[in-house]
Image 1 (cartoon, one colour):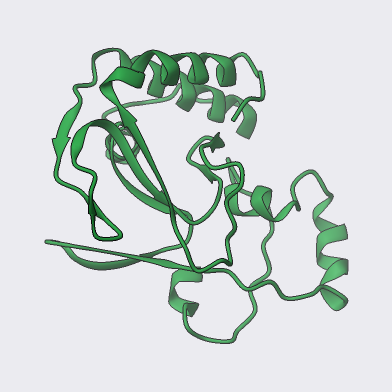
Image 2 (cartoon, helix red, strand yellow; image 1 turned 90 degrees about the vertical axis):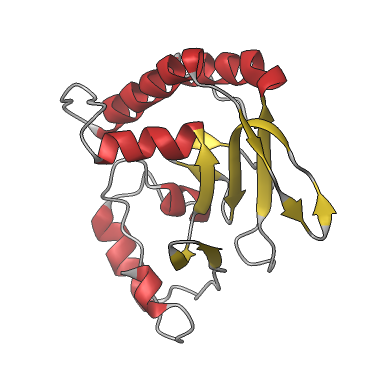
Amino acid sequence: MARQLIGKRTPIAILPLGTANNVAKMLGITGRPVQDLIDAWKTARCVNFDAGVAKGPWGSQCFIEGFGVGLFAETVSGLAAGKLDPAHSDGPKKVVRQVLTILKDQLTNYPSQDMMVRLDGQDVSGDYILLEALNIRYIGPNLDLVPRADNNDGFLDVVFVTKGQRTRLNKYLSDRINRKSRP
């Protein structure tokens, strides 16, 4: 829904009723009762929020959170297609933890990919496991990839994970699964 309003001056209210609630988390409105959030609409201030555009052979697609290729994108695609199935859970925190576990399992045998990449006119091609262009600090199951992200600075933050950083990413995912908060 938010993508349909890109470029318009229509305000959007965020209610963190989903699983990961990455945008709400970025805006600092998670953990509050929904009724309190709704009551605050009368006095809430509007916050501008950038949107990105990904272009490729498929055409052009706007995004709010991020866009990427590699481990995370393929895992999400597998989840959406039903190829990977997190066990049914009784709450968002358990679902997030299960998706983190699936990502960690996928990482074990996920091949790095030789990618041709140009960023701000620079050749940054390399052998990557994951590449994400982010507008906010979180993606997917609350992966905190860009702690200093600014959703209204006119820039995207780009995260690359090389095959040489596989162990580091594995440790990060383990820490997140074990509820250790570390960007």
